[in-house]
Image 1 (cartoon, helix red, strand yellow):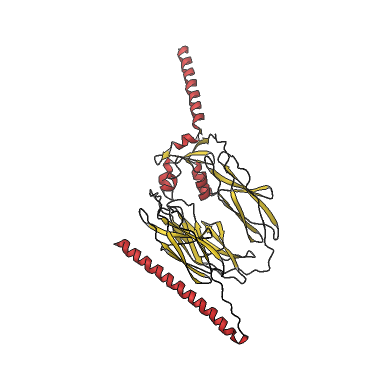
Image 2 (cartoon, rainbow, N blue to C red; image 1 turned 45 degrees about the horizontal axis):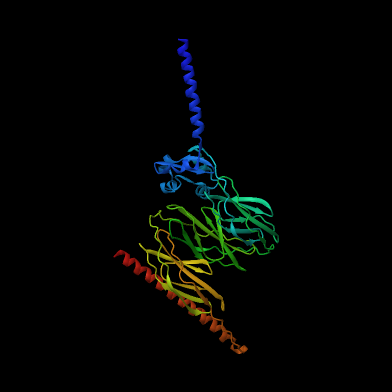
Length: 433
């Protein structure tokens, strides 16, 4: 009997030891292991070097199942932190699905972030932007350094440095890092000086008519009516889901890198050189398209040409693109920067500067967000502004000519807008047929 009890005791110890060994092994996973759990019925993901089994959460996610399915078998750090950052509830929910830690074997550093630029916004704010780095696994974030000291980290390729001192010069550099903690070498250094303290305390008017146009599963475009100020409006701050994400000088913004089938809300504020900010615009919400299996890009727009309407007004038109399903619209680029999206094959670029050279290209896109190659590059120089010598008695005539030119521009713009509306109605009628 004693012998039997001794054998049972040994067996218990062996089973218990084996159980401990399995538990220890089960709490450490490699990236390769996580990548095998990549379906809606077996879904694991990585966030900040921790592994989570989200299979049972897919049907419970308030934003829809597709957002979670997109993370299955991947390192979801960037997607999760971009969407939720330090929000308490999503992080607590995620923690409840924790199953172990990631065994990090990656020793390759990301590439260096390039094209670091600065933009002085006010006496207390400088904005940074740079081109994304790449990594053998994935880039999970960027470390921002100011005057040689690490200031902050972000998952975005932009950063707004606030709380600065007026009339002060600051220097910045950026390093990329991955989930394994590998860091790139430093970017180039970019410097900027904050504006001087101003006596201007008047805020710009509120931006109005904010609208959102869903372009694809990853892009929403915003447009709004310009604000006014006692001196000058210098830019607009874009807020998505309550967080400031960008600053732009014009009254439009393309928000890219979004998640499919996800709703986003936006507001815009105008600001001036003194840092005064308007109240919020109206709130708009839009939901990105679902992920599509369509991976075919439209053909490139052809025969891009321009018509010089006035010294500040250029009309563009081009031959329509073709797609395996349907072309949804066109992106207009001026001097390499996207300035607008349109449904039809023409665009009015107004508010230009006289005797100035501009380059234009156009790209087509479809509902899946596939983007075509660029059209031919068009270089156009606006007309010189006619200035005549007038005697004092003819001053009124000179002013009247300017007014007539403005009215002509306004009429042409309204005609083009009417053409767009008619074209859109024709397209709807064709689609119904």
